[in-house]
Length: 384
Image: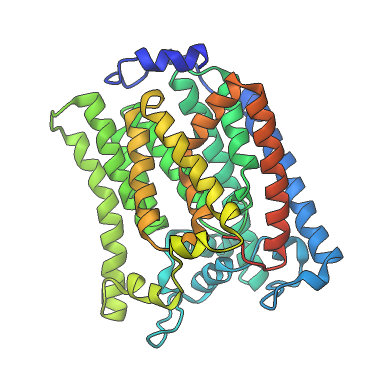
């Protein structure tokens, strides 16, 4: 590994800051390592999506539609995007048993869409535009925190920038710019870790509460941050620890709202049965097995490698989130779910820093796959 990576193996994890606190993300470094790659990759994805819509009309899925009638918006607005727009515009609606319902979708992202539309207008197109803007702003915020965490851990700037690149070029990274809450949760999770490292536990409490409202399994972030608290404080129980309770409180507040409105605090779980589950066995026997399982296998390898190279709290986050993903029986979507496992991107950045051939191979394969999958998504063909 690089000198910075080797330093982590010798580091004292009880120290909240493992590198010189002067190692900060300067505006110039953020622009070079995050903003420019963000713009390049998003333009590539947008070009791929528009090419598919205009040049491959015969490949459109039977479920292809134009929510706004504007292709440059619609290519980012299929599948779950429609559900989030429905929640933002009309609130939660209970459907008869066995039917899909927007109750399944967590409230924070559509709530932010609704707030944005309060200022920008309430047309259907505006809701989607606001959702896409929120996702892309959150993605840039997440990249900023990723760079900051890498530098804080003693990695050099090349490792940090390649970790950010690994996020942006990942095969399903277009979900981070679509009208989906993936980048929102990623930003909240990385911000929570960063401010925990800074021992700003009150702010951490706010962030974990919001994370639990952005997706139900976000409550697991509190568990991973409890490991971070232990690294800093040991078994000493102080007031700061109780800020992590805002994660469960965030989830319980949403459950209380569902109980009051629908008579069932687990309504968001009950409606999941309307979506067909997909077992690992089914995926293994499909023609899409390499595409669906390749990224999760890569991340499993990164998790194992990170056991000795990453901060234990990061690894705890990956393991907690990853285990829940594996037990959810939603393997058709797992290439999207793993996007939030930011420690794996840290490892990819560290490996790319040491092995240029790996960096080039990862870029070539991921760029090809991300372009292909973006075209499928733009045509409303299932991706993840």
